[in-house]
Length: 177
Image 1 (cartoon, rainbow, N blue to C red):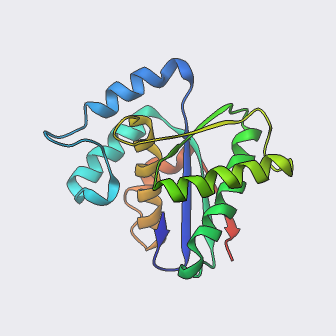
Image 2 (image 1 turned 180 degrees about the vertical axis):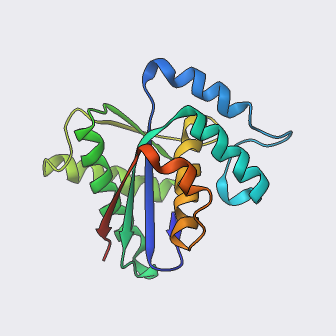
């Protein structure tokens, strides 16, 4: 998630396999008629408050990497730096499976290439299995979007959503230049 003030956010929410179906059901129950997915930037403040309340009830554990010093012309570089940090940290949390939100086939290919490089450099644990899914098909992807959305508002001075959800989220700040 790119922010105007030189910040790139990448978030992961940890969901145990035995909780995944319950989380998916609870997230799908939040959809409005005709809505295919939850997406923070598409919601108004009233809806955001509902989403934060629901996410907080799930008591998510997770990691957010905040890449600072971003030059907007080098967004993909910031993404790669945040991805490397995030994947390393997820490995430290004994995560085996990581699901990324699909973007565009060319951009997804860049992510795949980055993972190969990271594994070759032993910069991420070899046991990590990564996959890319459409957010309409995988509701668990909505969790990090909501968390990152709340964090992005907090970075701009609006902490009302972030203050409710941040208790069990590790925030790592890195230089994204």
